[in-house]
Amino acid sequence: MSQDAVPRTSALTFEKGACCICGREDGEVLVKGKAPTLGSNSPEFAFIRCPECRVLFLDPRPTDESIGLLYPDQYYSRDFQPIRQAVVQKSSRLKQRLQFRILRSYGLIREPDAGEPERGSHWAPPRPPAAVWDLVCKTTVFPLAVRWSPLLQTLVYNRRFLRFRRKPARVLEVGFGNGLLLYALSHLDTELFGTEISPEACKVLAETLGAKTFCGQLWEANYEDNQFDLVIFSHSLEHLADPMRALREAQRIISPQGSVLVSVPNPDSLSARVFREHWTGYDFPRHLFLFGPDALRRMAQEAGLRASVVRFPLESGLYHFTQSINSRLGLRLLPQVLRRTLIAQLLYLPIAMSTAGDVLTASLSAEK
Image 1 (cartoon, rainbow, N blue to C red):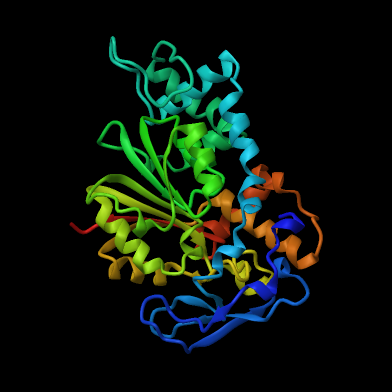
Image 2 (cartoon, rainbow, N blue to C red; image 1 turned 135 degrees about the vertical axis):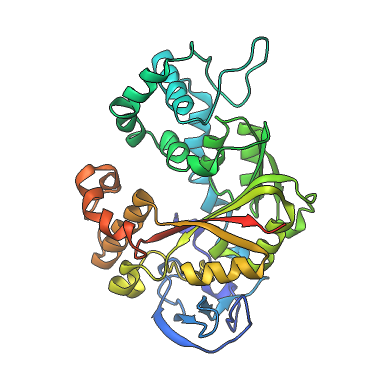
């Protein structure tokens, strides 16, 4: 973030933190630290674990009236250039064909019927490849192509959550940030929706992707009951002043066969215990709450949802792990391209296969 985007500490106001489920204000203090983004005059913050719900809450935390100061337009606009370039620039014909074949082989897109116009695709589909050809490529060429393509990684690694009964599927991302996830989803047969608190972010996504954006909180958008096939909180739930209200609203607006996909930093991770205040998942004071697997299941239950899938993704967890090392050492010793190298992934794999991964992803289904 640029210096212009750093809010003045004096302009922020704070209040006592409390658990987002039961409202308790006491508990075990796990870590204390200051916010580098607030400068040398940053107050000291603490993350406290609620003894009943296992949720970590920030204390003190920014008030609802001043929290927007932590997210000026510069916080978003620094990341808009990649999505503008991705939408405008056309890939080569060969790359388009390869992308289509990979997504088709994993069951994420299909050939249009005769006379049917294409939807959700930026390239013309080739002739359908044979099933045997798909099988051979999925064990040889395709994994290499996916590894070095952020777009394909996003779609292929999350494919179990992206197979929809309704076409086009209605997908809503809450707190879409730079919009790159919605850009990836635009390659599927989807109708895109998104919420953000930044008017600039909403404008850019509406112009570049044609997404139906809403500037404000999820519960202010007044979406219809059962409107969406998928609601996504990709590293946004921990930023919300009332995450329980957001999950209850998500439960109301997803269809009976729909789901809510949540990705959050995992405070029960090995990195959080080792790096303490330098762990990137704390991000004082923007992260107001943190949820381990037990806390997230408890929140889902309170919201009328059920955690059907809980996993710890390898590459995003490795990204947070290297970020924490760099923060602890005070320099950028480890480049972020490291997360794509096979040896680094193999070393981190035992952590990701346990419950100690840095990032937690859960699929929540509705109990309707």
